[in-house]
Image (tube, rainbow, N blue to C red):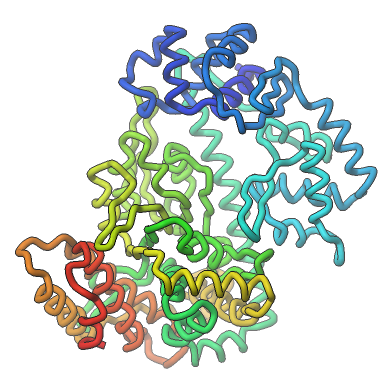
Length: 582
């Protein structure tokens, strides 16, 4: 049957205004059978729970729920049938007000206001000044338009930092704004009665929507490569003949200092690894590839989000251009792990990078450790809810995540309570962030230089992005470059194994206990990092393979020793070992 739009809006309202624990209490109070299957609110699926409640209540009961229970007072909801603002629910809609305010915006800003709204609709999520500006006429500043649209309650701020802000259109107002802009809305979803499988309908909607986003990202990569091949190919090849991991490190050190640079180095090298190139040795295949997942963890405010998101996707308002592969990075801000598991089906047999801020939040959901272990291993995912089975499908992508931990004089304590979380960490390249005086100084200096326009990284970023995009296209056999350049595996050498072996022996010698707190997977990640770093040397020779470079090995050994120290609760000083090894 066709969806009752009022029912769907009521479900969305409940989901946004109440945390899952409160939804659980509401469902138990209403004696809805669905909630009897769970021990606590952490076990329920928010989509299912909110739909169950929405399907069992009238508007009068809805008002009673908001009077008796504690909604998120800061939440805003501006629907066709319901309005929630300043902590109060109204049983009438907000659309007529938005229609009138859209007229005011168009009257004042004309087609520029329409361009801004079209961009926000097309992105389907948050968008900063840079994204909005690119679709406006030259010389038009979108800031006043965005401020006016927000004042008129047509859009809302979705993210705001010290120097950066993003805006979005509320989900419940999308149909209205699409209609006002003359954009055909998607066909209405279909839904089964709540006694059957509403979550399956959600799954299908999510996957179909995600496939459309994949198509947009594919188009972004194709357009970027077309422009590169027509205008800058010779320059990129020339740049690549002199570029290396050491060159990249030098570029980043000049920008951010001797401590901060390494986080961005990891993020950019991971982008090269996304091509997932074979790693071979002189006798044949190793079974390893260059791709790996990245985790930056530590105290808040230490630059984790900057390295994982801003350096890769760009933050144009802060004059940070993107350094990542165009169209191959999926930002997952605000996505629940259940939705991630569902949309992952749209990426089967494809390799993307999922950028996940606040990774902690995903582990508040029961059963996610096993799913994410499979995701890290690029394995077959199957996730069973009591009324839905997701998959099975093979997850072929990687993740770049950050999360907060409590950091002490020695070691750290994860804020993720699941005792099996170390199994997920064990499958990533990890980097601890401690807010030392030196890191604090480098962050403050970088922020000041960026604010004052003293750091100009536009050309360097374009050169690197062109290079990583071309290497990715060549090594993945993209149709636009196929036949122009040969595929080259990365060849690991005996020297590489010797350096890793020497590092291992030096580390074990410094650990006083018999028990080792890190697994052998750490060496595997160090080798993958070295091989991904060596992809920067693709144009250095005419060999039919890429040898692991000395500078790549140097940074891999540094990564290995420093992470082993952190995993060992810093029982040894990595500087002392590195002085002997490098």
